[in-house]
Length: 262
Ligand SMILES: Nc1ncnc2c1ncn2[C@@H]1O[C@H](COP(=O)(O)OP(=O)(O)OP(=O)(O)O)[C@@H](O)[C@H]1O
Ligand SMILES: [Mg+2]
Image (cartoon, rainbow, N blue to C red):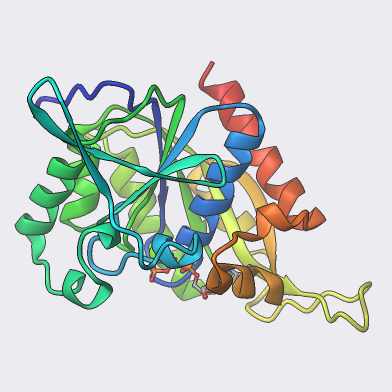
């Protein structure tokens, strides 16, 4: 299938997982902000047509996208927040309506969104994918030039089994999307009253084991932190709150991505 050539899109980074609810959107949002903090012009695309969560995470749930006209063509302007350009289907329909899109319709909508947006010379575009290996993932993989992907998982076996499927899809010969590595989320819990104790609620070492098995790198481990969850609900991703753990995990990953994309 022929790839789309979209002006100003930048290097495309996919954030994917096999299983739902493991923290893709959280990783995509904080990673985009970290890339931007390294001085890279970055955009974030919420490709979760079925359940967009990026608007809430950025406090943009009541925001509509602007349409501009250039050379007789109508173009969508992404919404700029915290220094990054953001685009989500949530800016066009409310969350409830988004849930009823079906396969081909969802893919077509996403393609149209990508093609009719006024991307302003991004260096990076981080794409927050829906969970699994559905039409949306395939459309993006087939139609865009992808610089690389990140696989998010939690340490449990069920999540690892699903991440294996996602990795196999990316690494298939005819697809061949580079995988930068695995990010293990919700790795452990540290009680505020006992900061030197780590509780591995979902088991220990899962991310490391799957990375080894797939021959890819374990890029980072993110603990379970209430502030991360609260930040997502409050519309300001935790990266912006100078949380040392979150900052160091995401800065390490973004610097590595910048290096690998040079
Ligand atoms: N490390 C963490 N500590 C605490 N809460 C977290 C952490 N990571 C994610 N969460 C919370 O878990 C929930 C699910 O995270 P998120 O929406 O990022 O997952 P997802 O993989 O994008 O889900 P979906 O598959 O539905 O798109 C959110 O409420 C988020 O704030
Ligand atoms: Mg999500």
